[in-house]
Structure formats: structure tokens, C-alpha cells
Length: 504
Image 1 (tube, rainbow, N blue to C red):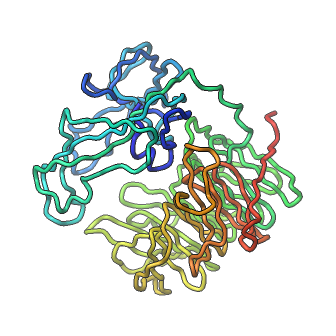
Image 2 (image 1 turned 90 degrees about the vertical axis):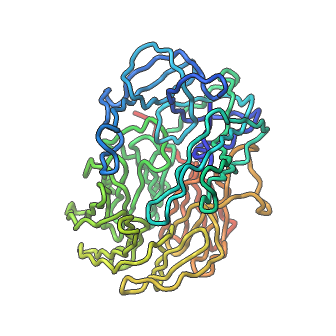
Image 3 (image 1 turned 90 degrees about the horizontal axis):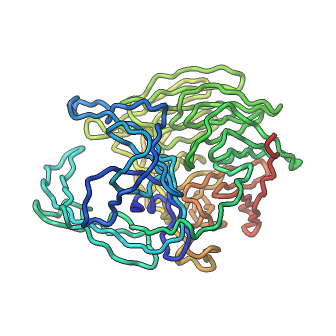
């Protein structure tokens, strides 16, 4: 199977190491036979429909794509011998089939199929690309590259590094007709029999955490199940009328705890858990993002070029706000409500800052140059911080100051109360070694948001951690498991064991 550069770079697939056990979320892509390409295989499989067998018209309509260049697509489940995959097919199929194509190790949200086995061989896959056209400068103009047929090469490695060559970027200095090399992933040979059976799934596989006071709330990765750990270490389980996610997604649902309960928000809607043990569905529409302040929830969901905004209160009130043109990016809170970045790609692209009060009042700032940033940090003054080493202050009139360099570099980040955190590589950090050789890992560092110095670090095995701050000055972290740390005592890291009630 071809484990894509995207899946490895995104952390969904661990770095392939010969001799280790690999598990990959699989897509099947039908292709024509090509004896020169070892990533193409012919398999006999059982095919059944997903999504009730109803096809979708792909891609979404746009002025740039004529109707006759769109196609119907069926989402099908392909079941092989000890492996399975999702097939986004342009033709309907069902039953026993003989198919030719590629098995792709891809992102978990895109597939319900997977394979697990011992890695017998790993080969980095390289293709040659030719620059057909170098367009004039301007917004949304991109160079046109084509893959040159018959140029695929493979290079054996004992262990993939996670760094892939891509000479197509930057393209500005390339000449039309020039050939370059791009590595697209790792071709992995798996022995599906040389593995032990998977352990029984725990009652709770944590995906996100939110704390308030002495209570911490944790939501499961696939199941519509939330647990609340109270100050007395008593665990209460909430079973919500939500979707069971067949494939693990790093953020299918997330949480916002407050004094009287917890909002559960995600791809299958909005739920509300109360301190009395009740859990109800509030809305079944998907949510793209959310932020909460003093129990008031602000959510957004993009539709076309606009983003719908909605506010909800714990007492059941809700209000639809005026949609904004563009995509809502990082958002943060202050005592009076919310601040968010709105980005648009039209007319060359620009950004605006949106302020929303707890009374549902809105104020949209002037147009600004496109803002790049990962985290909105609020203290005496909001700052938009990019975990790649830059920040820009936000003024009260919703304009911004000068860009400043900051001494951080990571792949993801966020805030937890008065602290900021980032995820960055563990390689080269003194005293940090992987506890399981060959398993992908990195560091989560809790930072002082003013000086950006690390006050504590935690080795984790997830590129998408979640963190929350409680009323006792502690930071709760979900990253494959649950940890709690007091940044004032950096050696206080403790793993939390979730002894949720057994099914019944």
C-alpha cells in the first residue's frame, strides 16, 4: 500500500519502520493496470455501499467547472482478506469484484477501512513532474504541473524520516518545460498475519477535554459518550443521541465546560450535558468551529462563500447572527465576548476582525492584509500568534499593529487559561526519547504567553492534542491519553486513568 506523504506529515500515519507493526487507514483508488508501477495491484474483494448507496455529484458546482465536467460518485466499502478500504467510485458496484488500483494509506476521516500488519519493506516513491505553464502573478494563479508517465522510482529505506522532497515548491524560479522530482509517500509491504490480536477497546478513548472549576469533561473519539470527573474523583457517564464514527477522526467532537454543564460540539451537531446527569441534543447540523465564554456558545459553519454564526445560552435561548463573508479562522474570548479572524479569498484576499458580544451584538473591523496565525492569545491585549514564529497585536478598533518575531516554532498550538501551548518535534530535545521506538511522537510544551519560554513539556503520541485549564491552576491535556499538569510545578505531570462505568 502507498502511505501518502500527507498522512505521514499530518501525523495520521506513523513513520513506517521495517520490522515494526503498522496500521493504516485505507482508501482504494481504481486505476488502469501498469506493470511498471508496483503500487498498482489487482485484488478480489467484496463491495458494499456506504451512505445508503446514494451517490453525490462531484465536485461542488462552480463557475469555473462546466456541468459536463462533473461526475457522480458512489462511496463504497471494499472488504479484502484482513483489510478493508473506502472506495470513492465513479461507477456503481456491489458484491464480489476483481479490481485494479492502489491501496492508499490516507487520513482517517476520509475512510472507514484499515489494515494492520508487520512492515516487511518500505520504499520512498518519487515521481517526475513537468512545468507546463508559469502563469502571470496574481491571486489564485498557480503553475501547471503534470506528472510525467513512466518516471516513478522507488528507494528502499529501513525507516522513513517523514521528510519528503518536493522540487515543485517554490515554482517561481522554474522554467516552463523543466522537470523536477517530488516524493509522494512510502510504499509499504505488510504481513497481515504476523500480528497479535488488538486489545479490547477501552470504554473511553479520549479525544478532547474541557475543565471548569474542579470538574473535567472528556469526550470519546468515536462514540457519543462524555464523562465528567468531579472533584471527589467520581465519574459520571453521559450517552448522547449522536453518531458513532466508524473511523477515528482527530476532532469529531469537542467540549466547552462551564459552571452549569458542558457543550458538546462537532460534526454531528450540538449537545448539552447538565450537572444532573442529563444529556440532550440541541441541534443536528454540523458545526465547523466554536468558542465559549461564561457558558455562552458561539458556533459557525461555512456554506459557500459565507459563514453562518449562531449563539446559544445554557437556558435554551439561541440567536442566528448576520452571516459573514469568508471563513472564520482563529477565535478567542475576553470578559465581554469573542474576537475572531475572518479570511476571504475574493478580490485578492483580505482579513477582517469580528467582535461578538455576549448579548449577540457584532462589530466587523476594516479590511486588512491577509492575516496568518494559529492562536488568538488574550491578556491585556489580544495577539494573533503563528506557531511558526510571528505575532501581531490586535488593537481595540479591530486593526492590527506591526508583525513581530517570537521564539517559537511548532505545528499546532492553542491556549489553556493564562498559558499557551505548542506541538513541536521531539528530536534533539535533551532528555526526551521515544518510549516506544519507531512510534511517531512529538512534544507538547506549555509556554509563558509573554516570554514564550517553556514552563513544562510532555512527550505525546498525537499531533492534535487538546488542552484546558481548570479552577485549581492545572492544565488538562488529551493526546492519546489524559494528563494533568500544574505549570507552577513542572514535575507534576500525572496520567489520569479513566475508569468509566462498564456498558450496561
